[in-house]
Length: 85
Picture 1: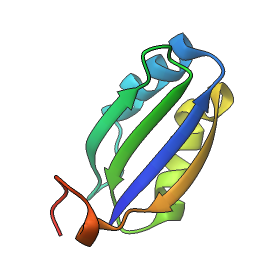
Picture 2 (picture 1 turned 30 degrees about the horizontal axis):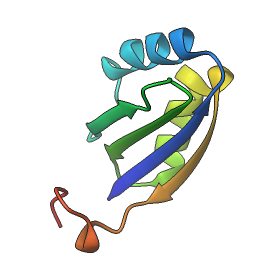
Picture 3 (picture 1 turned 135 degrees about the vertical axis):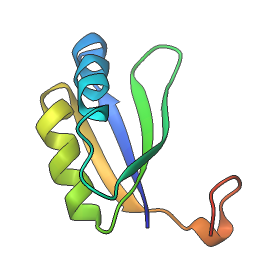
Picture 4 (picture 1 turned 90 degrees about the vertical axis):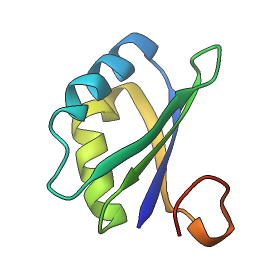
């Protein structure tokens, strides 16, 4: 499944630094599809494929949770543009 992590970022530098380090430690079977921030750095959207929302939440919070408030959702890939179904 595709899991969306939608973040309100409180510390832009540490948030992205943590995620860059995390990218090299993805759980087995996970793939990072999208990582994008708003121009002012206050918002971020990440899309990671994995077998559970909870797995992405645990991974993401470990590496960037202290620097943002993040909500996690299963993406509706069937109605998305650019994501495989």
